[in-house]
Length: 111
Length: 113
Image 1 (cartoon, rainbow over the protein chains, first blue to last red):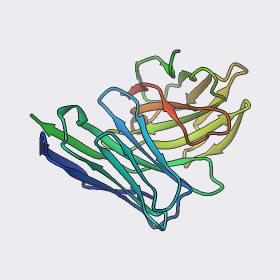
Image 2 (image 1 turned 60 degrees about the vertical axis):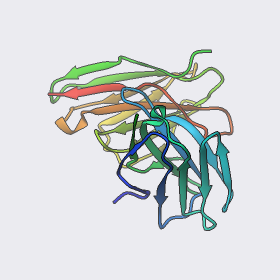
Image 3 (image 1 turned 60 degrees about the horizontal axis):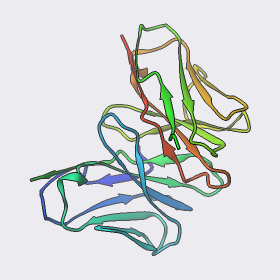
Image 4 (image 1 turned 180 degrees about the vertical axis):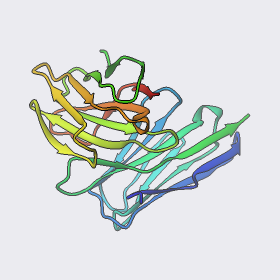
């Protein structure tokens, strides 16, 4: 059983559409990160959220950390083909040095 | 400034053999973590090295071992390879006192036949 559940597992949309992907857990995290991974490459860190209720914006990407620090969402506005990739969330628990990853959401943005 | 580098890029081994994977962290980083990513899955934490010692270990058998050198580079060793060890092995480095700011290398694709 994954500590972090990501949904949906797969998402295929047209360029210009908006989308939201989710990362949920029953555990509380001290911080949560979102990564994007492209085929044949390692994950690239997009954002770290550390405060419950925190919202961070990175151009067309909006990240939110749940008030209870158990969940997070990533919203993309006006998706572009370059947004295609595997989106991974990862959480750090209190007094624990390992990062736990979800299985990811595989996003395909079609032209 | 070079990012995290890993070698080799690809590797094919036979069941029962041993393998060593290498990682050079990003300049200025002192902590190295290793992950295993099976096809279609997220990375699974193997272990983390800091000051040449294993600081934390995930749920992996003793066949998986590692080392960190004084220059902060690291090796991952896997003994008695199983078919299920086939995966992308990722190394991530972190700067001092910022453990969760991880920068990943491109990975080593290991295939066990």
